[in-house]
Image (cartoon, rainbow, N blue to C red):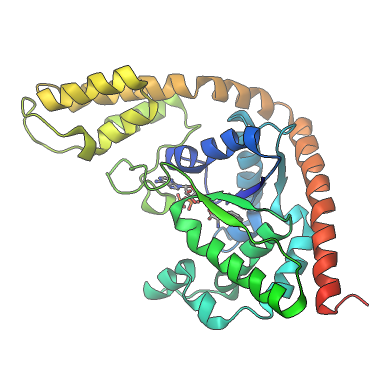
Length: 322
Ligand code: ADP
Ligand code: TRP
């Protein structure tokens, strides 16, 4: 199994990103024959339009991933833009990508529907994503539900190219991540940067505790029994609690006679303890920028070797290599 996935550095990682994606990439590094994980800064450029900010978010994303357990000896970690072969491959795929196919892609379609003017980068976003995947002969792409459409586009583009020019690309499969469906945010909607309802993985615990205490809850009387499964505060609690604590909390909900404030306090304690080790690792890494540079440098070199091989195959097949 050759695993590949990317994550955009469009903001600091939140619990939705961690439980919905990052944790599972990290687990997969042990099962894969090869695992490539990259920080999709070229994709992020479609939304982050400030150089200093993008640089900082990219660097933070790399440190965060290693602090959270991505092991550079097991997986190849790199920055998307450090592999220029991908951008070249993107052009080869762009020719032959039908406008209709891209018009149906949700990132572009949703923006257009909201009346926001989209640029060509956003329109071509799925083609670059396809190049990311195909450049490494990846066969397994772990992603959240929201990305399944992009993997389908990748398969379409790859099979179209193969059909036209011969067997060049490996057709990948999406591996839809458990939990990826929805971690709720502080307002009960899906946790997302764009809704401003996130709880960040590496937020200062004190500040985070305050924000957890402000998680929106209903105003039903304390004594009323409640259904834990439909309660977003319980869903957040369940992310961190072990089985016995989860069961006990669910029983408390069903019985009634508890205050949401108590649940919030317990949630804040659990979350702080859960990320304590990662926070400490992050603190140490942050103090060693040369180590991060080395990890990303090694990762980029390994990624480029593979991407150069695939790009050459594609160039030869379509006749742009004499
Ligand atoms: P955001 O919605 O905050 O902009 P991204 O789209 O950058 O987050 O998310 C990157 C990945 O993290 C997604 O593909 C998805 O797998 C996962 N993810 C994001 N938000 C959630 C969530 N609320 N619940 C579960 N997974 C999520
Ligand atoms: N579009 C993905 C997201 O927003 C990030 C991404 C870019 C990606 N290239 C990829 C994911 C290649 C998987 C494979 O989450």
